[in-house]
Image (cartoon, rainbow, N blue to C red; front, side):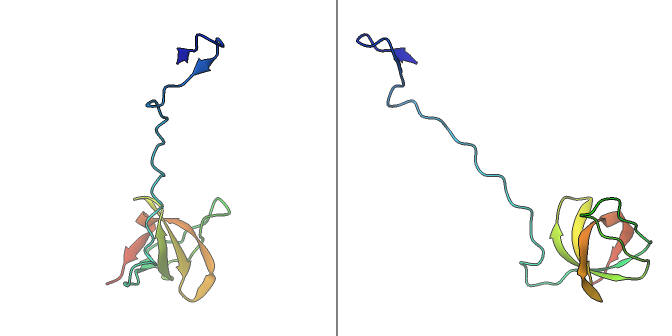
Length: 95
C-alpha cells in the first residue's frame, strides 16, 4: 500500500488488483454422460451416515455421481428413492 501525502490514508495503486482463485471444479457427473453406469453389490453395505447408501449383496446400483476415487453416489435400480454414497470397493461394475 502507498500512503497519500495529502490525507495520510492508505491507497491502492491502480495496477494492484486482488487475484481470485478459480472456482473449484464440480464433482464429475456420471449421469451427465450418455452412458449409464451400473454395478452389482458384492457385499451387504450398512450406511453409517445419512448421506450414505445401504444395500444388500446382489442389488444393482445406478451411478449418479463420482464423489472421489473411493466413494461414489448411486441409486438402487429397483428403488431409485434409495440414493447415497457408497464405497466403490463393495461393487462390481457391469458392462
